[in-house]
Amino acid sequence: MGVALAVIGLTSGYLLSAYVSNNAPFRQDPFGQQTVLQALPDDFPLPDAAEIANTGRGSFLPYRVELLSEQPVSEVAGAIKRKIEEGPWELVLVEDGDGVLRLQTVRLDLGGYMDVFAELHISDVDGGSITTLEFSPIPARNVASLNDWIDNSGTDR
Image (cartoon, rainbow, N blue to C red; front, top):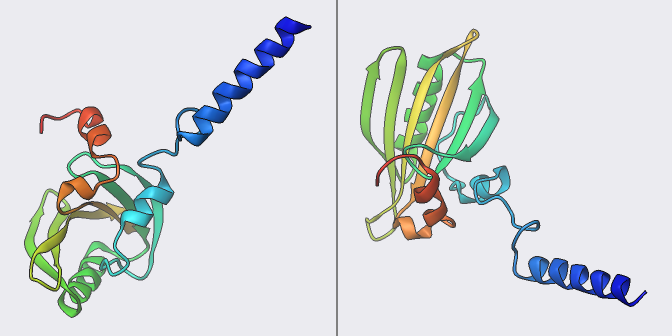
């Protein structure tokens, strides 16, 4: 009986300390959908007729969002470019090649400093298009789990 109580006490203590310290098994995925979407700026120039297909860790930049649309690449790209022109975002690169349209955009804060950098790849898929967005707050230390992303990105940084 005493051993059983000790085991229950140890297990309860472990679970309680893990919960309080936000460690396994209670740790939220640093690149889960909720975290990624919270990091995505509210004013990001996304196309209106797109659905979120996937989110997670990016390969080039920390955060990734994949959007599916029934609209072709040209319409999606046009909508994004119009929204960029209307807001605090600036288009810094447009590159078309190998069936993928690549856009890079930055958002400038009120002081004129870049506070978000993003890259979009828009390509044809099943009669519509897929937009893969990777983005990072600037400075990168604003990425909630920057070290985790760097350690697990598979690339040298």
